Length: 196
Image (cartoon, rainbow, N blue to C red):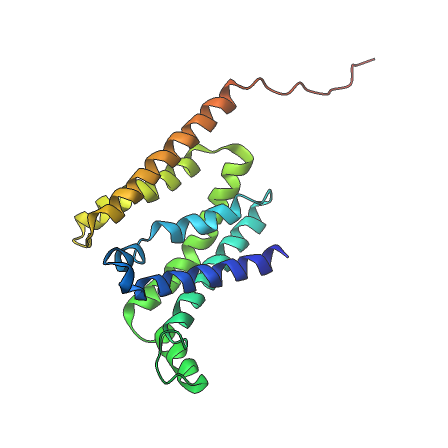
């Protein structure tokens, strides 16, 4: 059931991200918001955080990431995006977008690597409240604008990046609070049988 949910969530997320970019009537911010990368990392993290077993978390991270990419590519050639849509054009377009060109191949390869890793980070956050997991999520949100600026990929409007960085600061604060609270909490008493 969890795997089916991961497929559905991934397809819906990827399709929604692609469709958001086409909704230019909402304003210039939508094309920029559709290019934000951090949500693509947070999605497998959240699914991984629902799991207690590392292998299952990694597999869910991979499934949701690849499903999101498929949803994104499929929406590109869907009837909502393509005038004069036909099923044949959809299939040939979907094959072309996933097999040709440099960038999409990089995104697919990156998803195969990052999906399981980020799913595992989510599991480590759930099980251990691992500080590396917290730093990863907060860093993905807070540092993406900085990384894009450094690589010349920071496109306007600026409020999109401000919102992303602000969300990162909020997430960092909450995760730091949970880490501090976990350290303050008394350890659970051991249930050893008394020796006789």
